[in-house]
Image 1: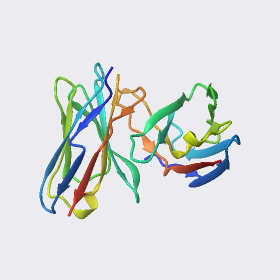
Image 2: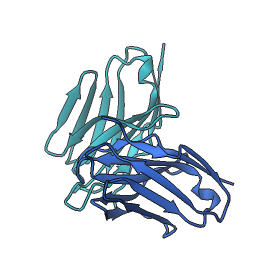
Image 3: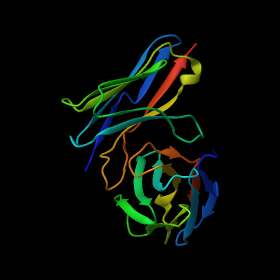
Image 4: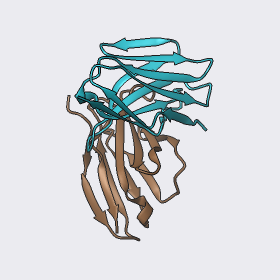
Length: 114
Length: 112
């Protein structure tokens, strides 16, 4: 089955700096890659996603890049703010007519320091 | 639209008991997936239902089961509870079987 590795497990940046979280996946048939943000005690929230027919997607301060050949994708957060502090999860899915099963990475605890 | 809701939010059970958790998806969403979240294992997929049919199943024992009703609401059941079943159980809904998934707040299950 699919396996997703996520690095780093913790990341501390200064406010205003950029943060990058990287994930690799094992199943070359995976074609959907969402990123979730989970604040303490809250539900995971979808912040951005990318499909395999696209190499990069951006939404304001957040961007995701996908390298299908290398089977890795990354989350980039620019101009970080204290409210960006949370756990971020990447996921991969082989979306077919048979459904949508997300395999998650182990999470990255991002801390944005003032 | 109202988001995904889950009941109950907190539950305490003892070993050997069984439990039923409920999930109401976003209106119009037909796919409901269930995940278990623990500090040690992270987020793990349990199963997915679409139009009352189980489409996918994760690697969990048969003690974990689920179903979906005609109104897309879903329940999951865990029988013969074990201490290791203590976790946050999250459901997520999606418009179709292959679109973005939106999570509910979860049910925190504690097994004593």
